[in-house]
Structure formats: C-alpha cells, structure tokens
Image (cartoon, rainbow, N blue to C red):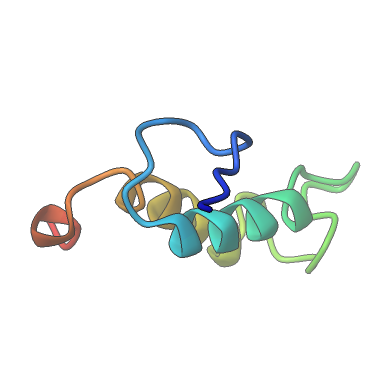
Length: 68
C-alpha cells in the first residue's frame, strides 16, 4: 500500500528539496526589529532565506529544468 502525504502542494516535483526548503523558510521567516533575520541575524533577507526561496521554486520544476 502506498501512503500519500497530502500536506505537499500537487505541483511539487522534488519532495525532499521542497521539504528542506520549507524547513529553512520556517526558520528564516522574518526580520527582527533591527532588520536582521530572526534566526541567523544576517541582514534581511538573509542568504539562507534567499537560498530556500530558490529551492522552493526549483522543487516545482522538472528535474531537467531546475538549473535554469
């Protein structure tokens, strides 16, 4: 029997990349009152946040188009 996780959007191609991106987006979620990331303190948007946004977008593209 195959279990299907309905928590993922239907357009996800790479589930592992999407899950990792969501975890990073959750940690690096917002700027603090001084304009730094609440998780790492780097200026907002921090490099991990930008990387997670790119990973989220890449997880939705076919594998042969993910590097574009």
